[in-house]
Image 1 (cartoon, rainbow, N blue to C red):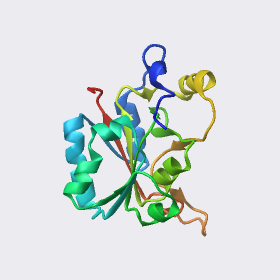
Image 2 (cartoon, rainbow, N blue to C red):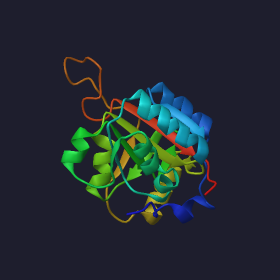
Image 3 (cartoon, helix red, strand yellow):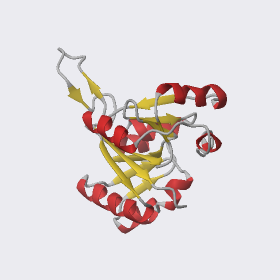
Image 4 (cartoon, one colour):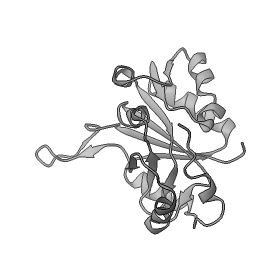
Length: 193
Protein backbone atom coordinates (compact mmCIF):
# COMPACT_ATOMS: atom_id res chain seq x y z
CA UNK A 1 0.00 0.00 0.00
CA UNK A 2 1.51 3.32 -1.10
CA UNK A 3 1.34 6.71 0.57
CA UNK A 4 -1.61 8.06 -1.41
CA UNK A 5 -3.92 9.49 1.22
CA UNK A 6 -2.14 12.82 1.40
CA UNK A 7 -1.04 13.61 -2.15
CA UNK A 8 -3.65 16.10 -3.29
CA UNK A 9 -4.04 17.66 0.17
CA UNK A 10 -0.54 19.11 0.23
CA UNK A 11 -0.82 20.89 -3.08
CA UNK A 12 -3.10 23.77 -2.14
CA UNK A 13 -4.93 24.14 1.14
CA UNK A 14 -2.44 23.00 3.76
CA UNK A 15 -0.88 25.70 5.87
CA UNK A 16 2.66 24.44 5.78
CA UNK A 17 4.86 24.29 8.82
CA UNK A 18 8.47 25.27 9.04
CA UNK A 19 11.32 22.80 8.94
CA UNK A 20 13.12 24.83 11.60
CA UNK A 21 10.13 24.59 13.99
CA UNK A 22 9.91 20.85 13.41
CA UNK A 23 13.66 20.35 13.86
CA UNK A 24 13.82 22.36 17.10
CA UNK A 25 10.99 20.37 18.67
CA UNK A 26 12.15 16.99 17.37
CA UNK A 27 15.73 17.48 18.55
CA UNK A 28 14.42 18.52 21.98
CA UNK A 29 13.17 14.93 22.37
CA UNK A 30 16.40 13.37 21.04
CA UNK A 31 15.46 12.84 17.39
CA UNK A 32 18.11 13.18 14.72
CA UNK A 33 16.81 15.40 11.87
CA UNK A 34 18.06 16.05 8.32
CA UNK A 35 16.85 18.08 5.34
CA UNK A 36 18.46 16.84 2.15
CA UNK A 37 18.06 15.85 -1.49
CA UNK A 38 17.94 12.32 -2.93
CA UNK A 39 21.67 12.15 -3.68
CA UNK A 40 22.79 13.32 -0.24
CA UNK A 41 20.14 11.20 1.49
CA UNK A 42 21.88 8.14 0.10
CA UNK A 43 25.13 9.29 1.75
CA UNK A 44 23.29 9.71 5.04
CA UNK A 45 22.00 6.13 4.77
CA UNK A 46 25.53 4.81 4.25
CA UNK A 47 26.69 6.72 7.35
CA UNK A 48 23.80 5.54 9.54
CA UNK A 49 24.06 1.91 8.41
CA UNK A 50 27.79 1.94 9.16
CA UNK A 51 27.40 3.75 12.49
CA UNK A 52 24.72 1.31 13.64
CA UNK A 53 26.67 -1.70 12.36
CA UNK A 54 23.48 -2.82 10.61
CA UNK A 55 23.16 -6.45 9.57
CA UNK A 56 19.40 -6.62 8.96
CA UNK A 57 17.08 -3.86 7.77
CA UNK A 58 13.34 -3.89 7.27
CA UNK A 59 11.49 -1.36 5.13
CA UNK A 60 7.99 -0.57 3.96
CA UNK A 61 7.92 -0.18 0.17
CA UNK A 62 7.09 3.28 -1.20
CA UNK A 63 8.01 5.41 -4.19
CA UNK A 64 10.39 7.48 -2.06
CA UNK A 65 12.17 4.38 -0.75
CA UNK A 66 12.49 3.10 -4.32
CA UNK A 67 13.99 6.43 -5.42
CA UNK A 68 16.49 6.35 -2.56
CA UNK A 69 17.69 2.92 -3.76
CA UNK A 70 17.83 1.41 -0.28
CA UNK A 71 18.07 -2.02 -1.92
CA UNK A 72 21.30 -1.05 -3.75
CA UNK A 73 22.82 0.55 -0.65
CA UNK A 74 22.09 -2.50 1.49
CA UNK A 75 23.47 -4.81 -1.18
CA UNK A 76 26.67 -2.70 -1.46
CA UNK A 77 27.10 -2.95 2.31
CA UNK A 78 26.20 -6.67 2.50
CA UNK A 79 23.14 -5.98 4.67
CA UNK A 80 20.01 -8.14 4.58
CA UNK A 81 16.96 -6.11 3.51
CA UNK A 82 13.36 -7.25 3.95
CA UNK A 83 10.45 -5.44 2.28
CA UNK A 84 7.92 -7.85 3.71
CA UNK A 85 7.68 -10.34 6.50
CA UNK A 86 6.40 -10.58 10.01
CA UNK A 87 7.54 -10.61 13.61
CA UNK A 88 10.47 -12.91 12.83
CA UNK A 89 12.08 -10.47 10.37
CA UNK A 90 11.17 -7.45 12.49
CA UNK A 91 12.69 -8.98 15.63
CA UNK A 92 16.14 -9.37 14.03
CA UNK A 93 16.16 -5.97 12.33
CA UNK A 94 18.67 -3.36 13.43
CA UNK A 95 16.98 -0.58 11.43
CA UNK A 96 13.46 0.02 10.12
CA UNK A 97 12.82 2.46 7.28
CA UNK A 98 9.41 3.82 6.34
CA UNK A 99 7.91 6.82 4.64
CA UNK A 100 5.67 8.93 6.82
CA UNK A 101 2.60 10.69 5.48
CA UNK A 102 3.65 14.03 6.95
CA UNK A 103 5.35 15.79 9.85
CA UNK A 104 3.76 18.02 12.47
CA UNK A 105 5.84 21.13 13.21
CA UNK A 106 3.86 21.97 16.35
CA UNK A 107 5.15 18.87 18.18
CA UNK A 108 8.12 17.60 16.17
CA UNK A 109 6.15 14.44 15.36
CA UNK A 110 5.99 12.33 12.24
CA UNK A 111 2.59 10.95 11.24
CA UNK A 112 2.25 7.39 10.03
CA UNK A 113 -0.93 6.08 8.42
CA UNK A 114 -0.47 2.34 8.56
CA UNK A 115 -3.26 0.00 7.72
CA UNK A 116 -0.76 -2.84 7.00
CA UNK A 117 0.69 -4.50 10.10
CA UNK A 118 4.09 -4.70 8.37
CA UNK A 119 4.38 -0.90 8.27
CA UNK A 120 3.74 -0.71 12.01
CA UNK A 121 6.35 -3.41 12.65
CA UNK A 122 8.90 -1.48 10.56
CA UNK A 123 8.46 1.67 12.66
CA UNK A 124 8.13 0.01 16.07
CA UNK A 125 10.33 -3.10 16.32
CA UNK A 126 13.93 -2.23 15.32
CA UNK A 127 16.29 -0.34 17.61
CA UNK A 128 16.57 2.47 15.03
CA UNK A 129 13.68 3.87 13.00
CA UNK A 130 14.45 6.04 9.97
CA UNK A 131 11.34 8.04 9.12
CA UNK A 132 11.33 9.54 5.63
CA UNK A 133 9.18 12.58 4.90
CA UNK A 134 8.78 14.53 1.68
CA UNK A 135 9.99 18.07 2.43
CA UNK A 136 6.73 19.68 1.32
CA UNK A 137 4.71 17.71 3.87
CA UNK A 138 5.30 19.61 7.07
CA UNK A 139 1.96 20.56 8.58
CA UNK A 140 1.93 23.63 10.82
CA UNK A 141 -0.40 22.50 13.62
CA UNK A 142 -2.95 19.98 14.85
CA UNK A 143 -5.88 21.98 13.46
CA UNK A 144 -4.48 21.73 9.94
CA UNK A 145 -3.69 18.04 10.35
CA UNK A 146 -7.18 17.27 11.63
CA UNK A 147 -8.69 19.09 8.64
CA UNK A 148 -6.78 16.68 6.39
CA UNK A 149 -7.85 13.68 8.45
CA UNK A 150 -11.47 14.77 8.59
CA UNK A 151 -11.65 15.05 4.82
CA UNK A 152 -9.44 12.17 3.69
CA UNK A 153 -8.96 9.54 6.36
CA UNK A 154 -10.63 6.25 5.48
CA UNK A 155 -9.51 3.50 7.82
CA UNK A 156 -6.38 2.09 9.35
CA UNK A 157 -4.10 3.11 12.12
CA UNK A 158 -2.53 6.55 12.63
CA UNK A 159 0.56 6.92 14.79
CA UNK A 160 2.06 10.16 16.03
CA UNK A 161 5.75 9.36 16.53
CA UNK A 162 7.62 11.91 18.61
CA UNK A 163 11.21 10.96 19.32
CA UNK A 164 12.53 7.60 20.45
CA UNK A 165 10.46 5.38 22.71
CA UNK A 166 10.48 6.62 26.31
CA UNK A 167 8.90 5.39 29.50
CA UNK A 168 9.17 6.09 33.19
CA UNK A 169 6.91 3.21 34.21
CA UNK A 170 9.52 1.50 36.34
CA UNK A 171 10.17 3.42 39.55
CA UNK A 172 9.76 6.72 37.65
CA UNK A 173 13.16 6.32 36.02
CA UNK A 174 13.25 7.50 32.40
CA UNK A 175 14.23 4.65 30.10
CA UNK A 176 14.74 4.93 26.35
CA UNK A 177 13.80 2.19 23.88
CA UNK A 178 11.77 -0.20 26.02
CA UNK A 179 8.53 -0.02 24.01
CA UNK A 180 9.99 0.80 20.60
CA UNK A 181 13.06 2.25 18.88
CA UNK A 182 15.73 3.87 21.02
CA UNK A 183 16.69 6.14 18.11
CA UNK A 184 14.51 8.09 15.69
CA UNK A 185 16.10 9.58 12.59
CA UNK A 186 13.87 11.85 10.49
CA UNK A 187 15.07 12.57 6.96
CA UNK A 188 13.18 15.19 4.98
CA UNK A 189 13.82 14.64 1.28
CA UNK A 190 13.44 17.63 -1.00
CA UNK A 191 10.91 16.94 -3.71
CA UNK A 192 12.85 16.58 -6.94
CA UNK A 193 11.38 13.31 -8.16
